[in-house]
Figure 1 (cartoon, rainbow over the protein chains, first blue to last red):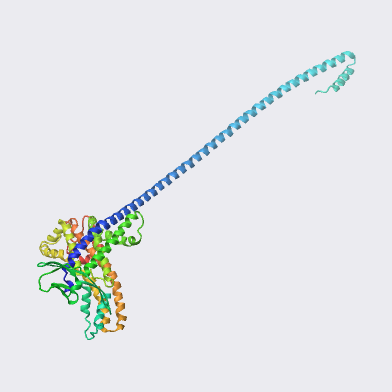
Figure 2 (tube, rainbow over the protein chains, first blue to last red; figure 1 turned 30 degrees about the horizontal axis):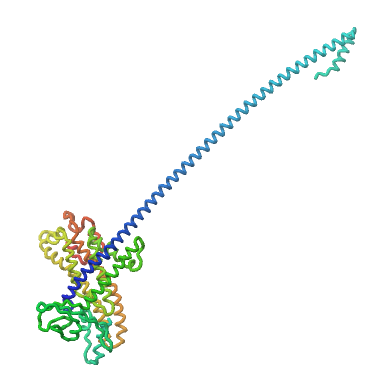
Length: 164
Length: 355
């Protein structure tokens, strides 16, 4: 029965040594180990949370970037439209101006032509008057009795005249 | 195991061929404590370390001398050894505080534990924020396991206060179980004095951390019909003692049984006096030895788990009696988890089935 009878000496030493071991380990091993474990877990937790936050931030950043991009695209479209409109307006304006100018030029031309024509007519009138005077002079000078001969003479003179 | 082979060989080597080999005596001698450390024997003699005998006699006071003086039937002063038990020649009372083999092994393993965990703690300080390596990396999972799977689940939110005890008990038992398997080592955790002390400490911690709810459970079990409550009182009171008692016996019996089985297999060789028996004994002995490696950590785990559960039962918060009587639950939901989490818990908690 020695096996199942606790020996007093061993019980005593076991109590003393185990309690000492418990105290020493608690002070020098378990406290720092459990503390470090907790610290490490906390830091991992914090890191994970930070990563999650960073991810969310990235997402929002991406979203805002996309919005910015869409805005920019919209603005570009707007600008293009505006440009188109201005260009059209310019072309229209140019066309109007051109037509007006053309009208003005043709008006001027017409006026000039009219002037030229009047001048020419005046000249023709003058020349015809001169001519008539000349013929009359010559007719008077030859004193022709014969009306036939007169007519012939007039025709002769008229043949010489070139109305230019 | 060296000691075993040494002393087992003695009868044949000293020429006493007629003397029968008594395996029971040899085995019991080897699992029991001793006042000397018998390393091994050769033809040239025994290699034995003698420890000091520290004896206190109420009549004569303290006496300290080497155990060599009373080894092998010798007597010294007023002392002699009877089956490794210190007695006096005149029959007077003596208290034996000797440094026995187990005490020496206890001191050595405690020193080993201190050195190992102090160095592990140091590496935590030196390697802040880095991944664990080496010994630290090997032992950390066990620490975390005891904290998360044993303490947190069994005790609940107040677990932190009990962590030092649980960790110390776990590693103390595990290390000593393993050291006990090495050749020539002492069978420390297979000694009832050691497990008695551990179980007593668990009982004391349980009692000192117990709250009103714990005692209400024992003396006025809720959810049980009135006449049954009277019957439950002695059952529950006995339960307070049987819990640590089971801790004591389980550890002692498991470790001692393992040693006895291995020694028995080896004894077969000497019983049959034939080397051929070794063909059978050695593989079986090896198998049991490997099994013992598993048992060594398993017993440490079970002891720690049950300790944590007993403490958990003592610190558990108030139950709502108006709830269905068949449900054990607490304010934190730990009890439910505990019951679902471990099969061992069911086996060792008869009180769970009771309400």
